[in-house]
Each structure stands twice: as C-alpha cells, then as structure tokens.
Length: 255
Ligand code: V07
Image 1 (cartoon, rainbow, N blue to C red):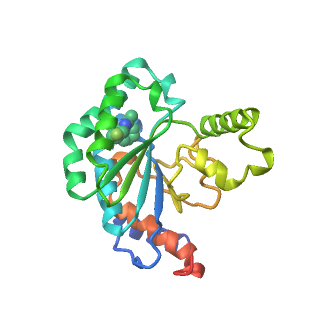
Image 2: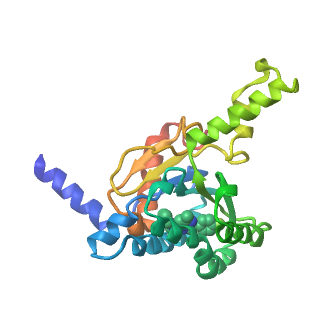
Image 3: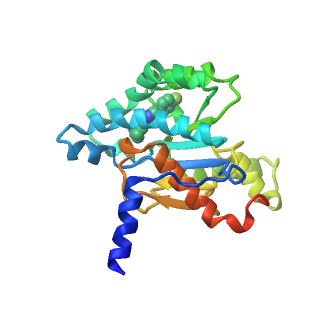
C-alpha cells in the first residue's frame, strides 16, 4: 500500500500531462500566491528576490489561464495585513506594479488581457496607484482574460465597507432593510461585476483563507499545492483544473 502511494507521488511530481475537458473550464480562478519569501530563503537569497520571481509567475499563470479559456483570474497581491511587514519589504512590494507595467504588461496586452484591481487602492502610495491605473487604462478595451489584482484587499474590510454603505443608505431613506439581498451585497463588494470564483488555489502548502474573498468563495472548489508561488507554472494550473473537473463532473456541462 505504501509503495503504491509512493509510486503515485512520484508520478505526480513528474507532472505528466493531465486530461482537461474544454467543456468544464472554471470561469473564475482565484489564487493566493504564497511562498515567495520561503522560496528565496531556501536559495539563500533575500525575500524580495522571491517577490520579483513571483511577478514572473504572475505572467506565466495569466498566459496559462488565458490559453485554457479561463475568463477571470484574481490574484491576491497584497493584503490589508501585509502592512505589518518590515518597511523595506513593503516599499519593495509597492514598486512591483511599476515593474510589472514596465516589464510584463506588453506581452499581456498582446494576449488581449484586461487588467483590473480590487481593494482599498486609495491608501496605496501614489507611484503604485499611478502604475496600477496605467495598467488598467492601457488594457481597458481588451476583450480577453480579465486579470484582477487584489491589492490592499481584506475580505472582512470589504464586508465592513459594504455594511457601512448599506447602513448609510438606510439612514438616508433610500434603502429599506428588506431590500438587502445576496445580489445587492454582491453589487456593493469590490469584486462587483465578477462571477464568484469557481476554483481557489493556494500555493506553498498552507491551507488557510487568510481573509481572502470571504463572501465570494462560498461554493468554490479549493486546490492546494506544496509548490512555492515562484515555481508555479502551466502544469500546476492544469493539475488544479483537472482536479476541479473530477470534482464537478456530475454537473459537467450543465452548470
Ligand atoms: C506583487 C508578485 C506576485 C507574488 C505575490 C506578491 C508580490 C503583480 C502586481 C501588480 C499589481 C497591480 C497591477 C499590476 C501588477 C503586484 C504587488 C505584489 C503589491 F496593476 N505582482 N505583484 N503587486 N507580487
């Protein structure tokens, strides 16, 4: 028995091609991109080298998702909790959208990708906001995959802001409590306009949500991998989608 499991593990490590049906591709994939610092540390390099390589993995994952026919890809780039990291690291992270614009965006524009951002973006440094706004503006008319960065995002903060806004509307007499429905809440979250994620991926072996899309993932399938985010490539995404299809096959094509 133990031997059989070992054989299976070694096959999985070699990442043989997996079978994916074109009829049941998750429309919306969300990813918690964990393990950038650990990946660097394992190589004896500073954490920021991990973040830099994580940015390359963003482009790989985007192109892979686009090739598979995924319509929406949401990536957790910076959480409301990440501000507690050392200042140097936060400063470096806040420059990544600028680098992304300079280094990675042209190839994504060629692939017809549209960039969006959700989260509390007003609180970001102006160079970060400017880069992010430029990425959004330069891809606004693209019609391919929607690449949605969660930046200064927190699931509870999003729900808190939504409840405050609804409370204000009630106080102003333009909303009655009976009118509050799931759909109304959907429309007031920063993910408004996107369908709920069908598949949530987290890298680096952690199995927590860490305040990511708490409302939206009510029915999402979860897939975890031990791979660090800078190692993530098309084969990981394909494994995740193949597993998603195995789990949802009873609805295949009917969902
Ligand atoms: C960040 C790279 C990916 C690994 C996880 C953390 C580090 C891309 C962006 C980005 C965001 C908005 C935008 C264009 C690019 C980004 C941050 C961190 C803060 F419009 N990667 N990436 N932003 N990392």
